[in-house]
Image (cartoon, rainbow, N blue to C red):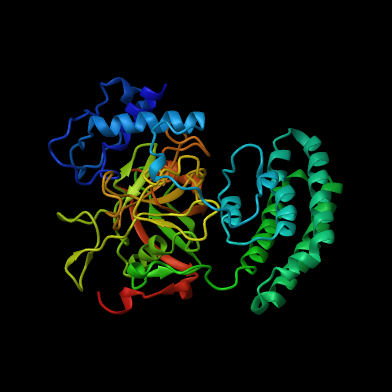
Length: 443
């Protein structure tokens, strides 16, 4: 199985500029075609090709061996390579929330964003968890689901009443009034959901649940007081997103009678990826992506960001060189992200990323597979789970910088094809969290 995963990784991920824009020519080559076995495993999902896509990149046998070992380690939970001399333990910063988030991996983008906030308040998490569990309760057919929903709701209401004082004490002083107001709305909304359950109105449950979780998320954001750490000095003058921002990406869909255009709402997480998110927001404000085509859409990822011409990233007009950013990975239990190295290279085989590739529509930076600090402007959205990308046991986690999730209309990403056009990307919230914006200086 490990060998299959590794070769799947070679033939699928290295066949596009998504992961290997520039590879030395003295490497062995693994061809990627519809005629080989591994391509057929993806079937028609791998058939969409970018007309501007460059030929498949090379992949050295050494890296294949490392991928095999990594896959074994990820599946067994035991490091497959003895790099212990370079390894070090991550010292916990936040208390263990495993009791609150145990069970199947979290795949909902909203929940992932809530748990990724740099807060330490068990009381609000105990309100959040049963409200999120309503989603699973609704998987039961018919009105029988409402009995389980009612149990979830009672658990959340009880947690709110018992923990309200602790929740309020966790609010940032400057945001306390707004936080209390949100808690009042949350409590009133729970009463409304209770009435919905009593009326046996199953269809109204999910919309109300979404509203309540938005209140919870807003309360949790009001617990963050300032930016929680210092970005390393060598990156402090780059565009940085110190907080969160929301963008809307409007895509014009071609050759689809059922869909003309779609607006995707994306939340960017600068708490866990300030350099990566800041770079993207800066490019958005330059209108870099407006009018750009989707350049890869193969059922595995949707990708864009490769400008016309020989450059494979954003050319900074002030330097006339490609602007690149470091690989940026925030691991659970750490105060700040790691820069310039994968978790694998750091020996942190068991570390979990704060922003995992769990959700459909996970957004990350593309880069050269063998150059950690080569990301510039190419971005991708993950579409499917596979041997490579099982939630919580993921070869991509810790190797590529996740910095956001599509939170609305993410399912429509599957309908996007090569040649569809990004009409615009606009920041609709959080632009004031961007510091050092280069778009205001030049270009």
